[in-house]
Length: 241
Image 1: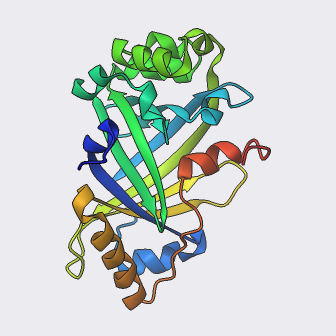
Image 2 (image 1 turned 45 degrees about the vertical axis):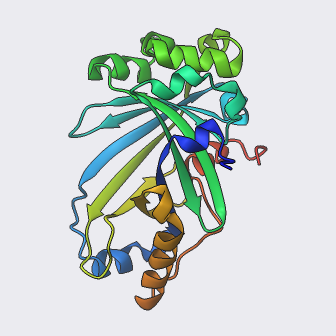
């Protein structure tokens, strides 16, 4: 008997993560022969109310501004109740389900990502347009279904902007592509995260491989953190747990 929920059946990716103390960056850069210039530079711009109504409801609304790629707008649900997701969403081409995994902690993610014109998204970030003007119909429909209405969209402003540098590479001693992200938070130490992406059926073995590989390399990692976005948003509102 298959006990999977409809959402679990459509999960197509598991992102396995570990964090590092930011002071370890020179050690990691030396060991992995990372170039001073990263593969990607981008800014993640998070929209919410001052009281973080979206975040408290498990909703993330983010614009990513890229230096050398097309900008993106993502509506994301974290640890959502799949009963609130209408089955029609699972057939939408831009609707995706994934799991973020750090140690024993797992977060189920549903998201719709679009790539409107860069100029429109930059205008939203600058406050010249409302973010609902950039959302596509599927994003608005998902927001309405999950939050009950779209009225809250009128109250959203740019809550936080985080600059990031990203390196992607293969190491001959490890079977999966590695991604190292360095996030610079205003008034805080940087965040440093290493991740790999695998199919759901390979997640447990791949996670064990990643931990063992880092241990063989003598690299100390941290499993006590599990979400860059949560750390970023709660850094400005320490009342949120």
